Image (cartoon, rainbow, N blue to C red; front, side, top):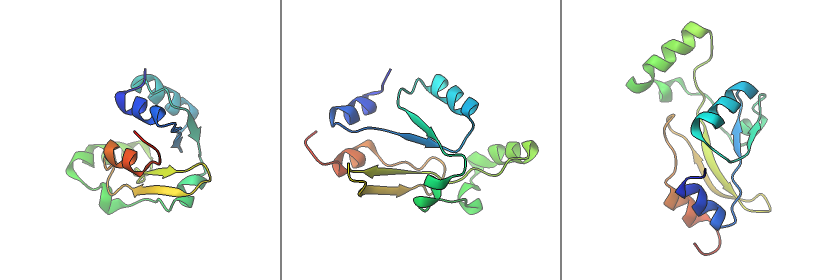
Length: 121
């Protein structure tokens, strides 16, 4: 089931593609747990991630809310989470909106995404 935000995007003829560098199993589990119906591309080498200038930042993830997650990563022998981002491209690939995250929960407002899209709401 799509959220109201997802319906707003599809009404505008937008296509949403999630990009993850995680495992197939992790992606499948996330899609099941969230009920997300958008397609997901797995990019384990982070080629797309680097193409959009995204990277790791210890300072950005060192927030109190994320200390537990950081400890869990260390115990499990995993890297700290990378900073993601949200990008809106037109049909020709021109970037209409670029929002590199400043911290793990930093996402643009749906109103900003819709305002950056061509066409009427």
